[in-house]
Amino acid sequence: MSKKSALQIARAAYSPKLPLGLQGNVSIKEGAPTQSVADQEEVKKLFPNTYGLPLVEFEPGEPQTYAPINVGVILSGGQAPGGHNVISGLFDGIKSIHPDSKLYGFILGPGGLVDHKYMELTADIIDEYRNTGGFDIIGSGRTKLEEEWQFEKGITILRELGIKALVIIGGDDSNTNACVLAEYYAAKEYGVQVIGCPKTIDGDLKNDQIETSFGFDTACKTYSELIGNIQRDCNSARKYWHFIKLMGRSASHIALECALQTQPNICLISEEVEAKNMSLADVVTYIANIVAQRAADGNNFGTVLIPEGLIEFVPEIKKLIAQLNDVLATEEAKLVARDKQIDFVKQHLSEDNLRVFQSLPTTVAHQLALDRDPHGNVQVSLIETEKLLSQMVAVELEKMKKQGKYNGKFNAQHHFFGYEGRCAAPSNYDADYCYSLGYNASRLIASGKTGYMSIIKNTTAPAVEWKAGGVPITMMMNMERRSGKMKPVIRKALVDLNGAPFKYFADKRDVWARYTSYVYPGPIQYFGPSEVCDKPTETLRYEQA
Image (tube, rainbow, N blue to C red; front, side, top):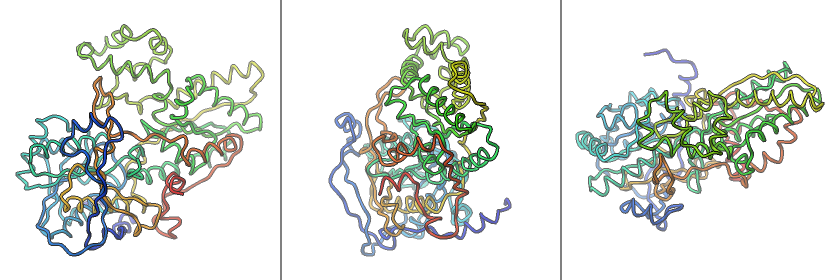
């Protein structure tokens, strides 16, 4: 057994807080039938057995007797702080239903279900992982569950282990797969329930029913500590501009939250860049003008926060990527050798998209055309947007200097904060939230639900006042083009430019740009006053105000 740190030992003793509706005996309250957020007829046709189910909420209730139940759990996709507490809550929940209930973990994600790789999660194992970061209890993976042969291989091992319910912990793609699996097992009358849990540090799995995805709170606090440290150094040396790229492939929630916590000089919001139809040159000019203004005030230093997915939101780049996705999804493209693929792409691009493609640095062009994730998406984390922008800003400042519009010194440092936040020990908020999500999943299972996502609401209030329940996954779906085909997917939540968090940021950013208004949040606090240790994100605070 590896040596434990003093913090690990102390955190193992922490008892996560539960909503009143999950304490003791519970009853279920059902709402009206639901429908998908868009494309209702198409989604309903694809999910006839799990579409239109009601929202549910748990309340204190009368004692009930349940038989033992065996449950399987899968960690899917990238890591997020709190995953171990979801599993801990699920374990404690099914044991409270009946002490002979068993929990099985499938190894290394959905692939473990297909390949029949699993382990029983006993009390001794669970206790080693309570309130810890990471997904290392069973590991995670990115195998997509979407083919009938996978579902059939899965049911074989589920029957062998006597598993009657499967909990899939993941993001929007993983929960879409959970819904597809729930529909398949329901249509076949296999008697296996499927429940999802909302995970992603990116914060883009949220809507009217899901206030936040787990891990977002901890990751943003971790990144904000690092940004604060850099800003303290920046304000001490006073000679560098720090370009800091932050995780968030499809939305800028992390960048916005970290900006609200640290008050940097510049924070780019991808959704705003797209809404304003800004070109890459426009973005560069915006940054350069702020650098010049601060230089005029004698401040040749500053911080710039950049969302990981920015490049995909620049309209001219977005159009290019859309056509690249279609071109590379063709059967013809799959037959082209890798060293010939760039030439193949150029031959199939429109005139405008070809012009943009050829204007990009060779490394960026290759990353857009060649490097894709398992879902067919551009791997934007590999594109060094922070270096691209700083280099372009340096060129623009040289032009401004010749025009007499800039007279300063520009030296850039580069950072990318990604993996640093994915496996941090969960904050008290995430520890409580995740434990509640897992425990709540056990109640959805006991209530016979399938095709639902576990949800906890009212989370800016004390934990005892949180509301526990479930939302049909089909309610969050729409149809989108993926790898050249229209598919049902959970709609991603982008930064709302009319929302309270962005409006507050937009109101303050001009002051932060010119003046040094840095905030230094420091590390996550696990012990101390509730207003320090249990506070939610600034995003939630403004949204729920």
